[in-house]
Length: 313
Image (tube, rainbow, N blue to C red):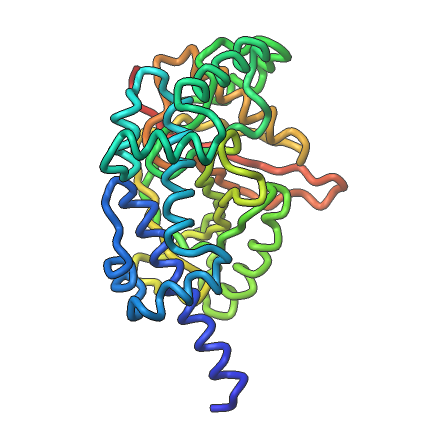
């Protein structure tokens, strides 16, 4: 085995282990996470784990954990104005509401009350959600305005939205962090990796983008999205290509044919429809499913199902 092959295999294993930690934190947000516990998830010693995590992610594990908890808390506070600050604190893994409130003010520059009031006022002024405010943070609801959004309303789009039972799916993903329109690079890497391994079995293989963060509370350069394909349950992750399970259940599903600049309008249509549907967003990640390849015209037309987990009001 030559040096280049060893380096590639080593890099894959390191990314696989760090992905495992990131996914574990997302699905265990309300738990206490010690260095020892997370190092066991990564299968590194505590001494080496915190250094490896910092080198590969650009953040210390403590900074990352605190940031993710606070971003999730911010999303919860503005997605459900009835949930209490103490409930949000506990759900995001803080064992003291006072500690949580101090950390929140330090991170956002506002108290929890000021933060909520700011977004209430923004919603009142705008009368509609911002385009692309269609994402959900880990362990929280999707982030839509509670007001009826009648400005520039597209009733034709809303005709194509209904609640469906969606199946659970096992996914291999390549994570993208940053602006939404740059996720194509992650898809290129994913397809180049999956093809030679016989994982692209279209039309059985489905292609999805899973959204992890709320752009209202997460800086654009930190927004996480996952370029995904469906795989069999026994498919193994490798390196930066991680694996996640997307639960089945009730989803509001909007089926659209859109140009690249119309994705935000399609997400807004789902927002407006939800406001009058008798349903509300539930815990879980929203995603886009692409049942067909986009057209080759310039600009291309995309066929997309926007899927948001929901529960009755």
